[in-house]
Length: 503
Image (cartoon, rainbow, N blue to C red; front, side, top):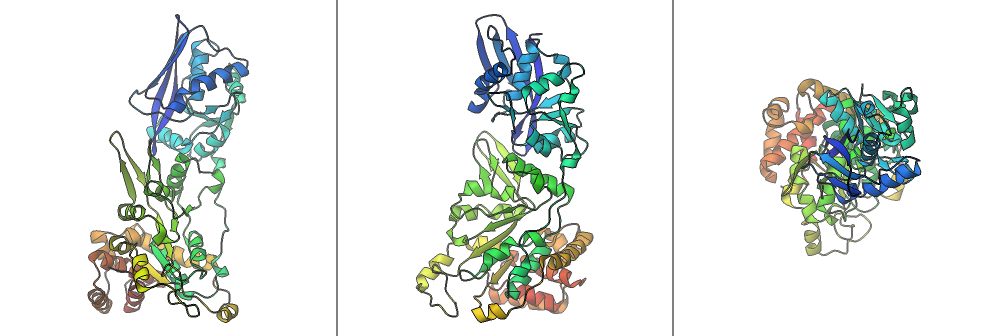
């Protein structure tokens, strides 16, 4: 048979669009033509496939006119994922394997020159696309990629290490040459990590961290160098409740697009901490073809921005819309791609350029103008979107030495889990996602608490957004206390945690 069709998929944002790899052999002058809006790395498959077939003892049809079409033609294709479909198509079209046995099979994989299969990005997205489409197909991938796709329940996934293993499996009775990968690859999330007990003192910042975890709220830590701001941020993932299966799949699918997901990390909340030299494209995503940025890679996890004023202002301003909407739409002249961006922001900063403004024992060397310019790098609209501002003071050595061990993360996480359960049973989402009528209904304070909030909002000139964010904080404080309503004590604590934010 001179024509063979193999099914595969191309990455299109967070989805995996179906692609038909059509291979045709004809008489005429020997040539190799690949069409279908393929990027350079896809066109280079010609040399990789040629060497892989020859080094595997298989025949490459040198004396034929080879035409390979990647359909649909208007969908961009990139990466080495089409090496394996092209090789199988050539073998089927030249009669070296039976084309009928390729029916009901989808595959992807990069080939080495020796014929070994190398992993590809987006394996989990491929598995989810097949499952959601309701297709009765088997998925064939390299071993590492197959372990990702096997996280999708009830999906037949097979792996092979070498091209010859696949060829042997496509002959009658040779199915044993492929390794089935079951759902057992989805290991339970591992426990451990930094413990909150290791931080001595700092009761106020640790309380704020607990409130942020209970409500899914954003948090800004400000204080001199060495006071524990980064240590506090690193312990936030250990306080958050475990991911549901749907959330774990969403998080893993985004990481898989970037080639950064490992099955051993299944069910763990991601913790992303980009350097302050990161550009706006690195943070929110972009490129050609568009790829997810740090805010998407932190899906259902924590995004930690240390030395916040040192980030480019354009990068911080690009975070404003995703912080509100939980998604990012990357629009270009030729393509529009939407990525999820449901992350919890934790940021840290020094109070001034030298870092010692307000330090009890070290003198600040900065002038008032330098302090104002440094703090002015953070715009009012950006600061307005933060929920909590916490001062992390410098503690004297004798206070640190005498401070007892704090509560372990497991104890605090249990309180956070109870508060999250209350919120989910009451409103179906965490407090940070309350909007509009739901916020007015679920976070309605009592008369005394409302009077306190209105007095603080008028005195501090809060915007409507800041007013609503204080309501979310107060609702989280009440959930931690197990209170059905927002009492004045909860509102006072929420106001105190907002006072340092500029309107």
